[in-house]
Amino acid sequence: MTLSEDRLQERLTPRAVQFYPQVESTNDLAMEWLHQGAVSGAVVVADEQRKGRGRLGRTWHTPPGVSLAVSMILRPRPEHLPQITMLGALAIHDLLVGLGLATTGIKWPNDVHINRRKVSGVLAEAAWTGDKLAGVVLGMGINVRADFSGSDLAQQAISIEPALGRAVDRVDLLVDLLARADVWAGQLGTKTLFTAWQSRLVTLGQTVTYGGLTGTAELVTPDGALSIRTGDGQLHRVIAGDVVVEDGS
Ligand code: BTN
Image (cartoon, rainbow, N blue to C red; front, top):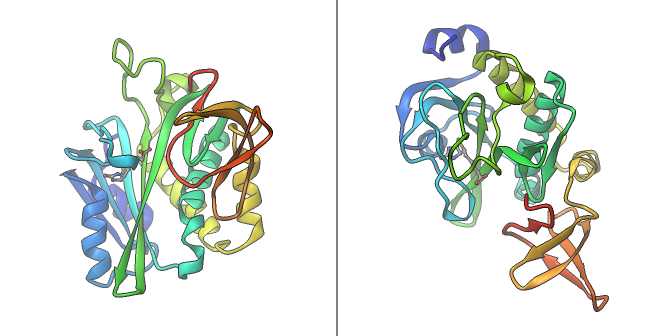
C-alpha cells in the first residue's frame, strides 16, 4: 500500500500531520512549521526526500516507495535535549522488536541495527530563539524495502522487509512508531528513558575505534556520552561522532 495524505489523516487523526509525496528534507519543513507554531507531536512525512540529511553532514537516501521519512516536532525542556535522539532510537528499536526482529539493537549513539547492519538513523535539530529553546525536530529515517544488494552499502545497510521475510505496510509502521515515540516523550527527563536506551546499546563491551583511539566501549552517561577504555587503562569520553566496531559495523 502506498503512503497517501488520506490514509495518513485517517490513521493519525487527531495528530497534526503534513504529508508530501516528495520533499528535499522533512526536517527542513518541520523546522519551518515549528517556527510557525506547530504543536508538540506534529509530524511531517514524505514518501521521497531529494536532499535527506543524516548526522555529521552526511546524505540520507530516501527513494520513493521504499522508506519511512518522518520528522516529529517536540517542545521539550532544554535539559531534556540529550534524550531526544535516545527517544527516537528507542521508539524505532522497540517498533522493530515488536515486529519480531529480535536481533535489533542500538549502535551508539543512535543508529538502529539489525544483525549489525543499519536499518535506521535519527537526526535531531534544535531551534533556538535567542537563548530560549523554541523546540526540536526529531527526524527518523527507516529503510523498509530499500534494496542495497550490489551497492557499496550492501554490507552495512539493511531493510525491514528482507530481514523479516514479509511485507509490511508503511502506514502501520508509522502509526506504531509515533505511538511509541509519544510514550517515550512522556518519559523525557527520567532515568527510565536513559536506562532503556543504555540496555539496548549493542556497542557496550565491544572493541571500538574512534579517531585514533581503540579500546573497549565501557559505559555511557545520562548526557549520551560514551567512555572508551584504552589499553593503557585510561577512560576517554566521546560526546559525538561515530565509532567503528571491531566487527566492522
Ligand atoms: C543518520 O543516521 O545519519 C540520521 C539519518 C536521519 C534521516 C531522517 S529521514 C527524515 C529526516 N529528514 C532528514 O533529512 N533526515 C531525517
